[in-house]
Image (cartoon, rainbow, N blue to C red; front, side, top):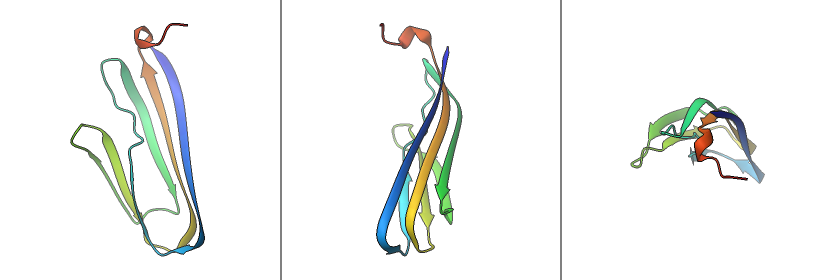
Length: 92
């Protein structure tokens, strides 16, 4: 198994304050026969008031969250550690 550490950040910037925002992300890697998600963390700033984690119809992990305080910028960062079987890696 080969271990990967993955980080993804999305930043939003608004010219005027946003009163509230509802968001849905699909950033958590799936575990399958050839890969295993060892850890996953989602960080949102400003901190969300509501947060819900579930699976969609296809078995993908989703997270929805809402920020109810006025904000001009928001950042969403997902960090994961994934192990992938060497046999499924593309040849060089």
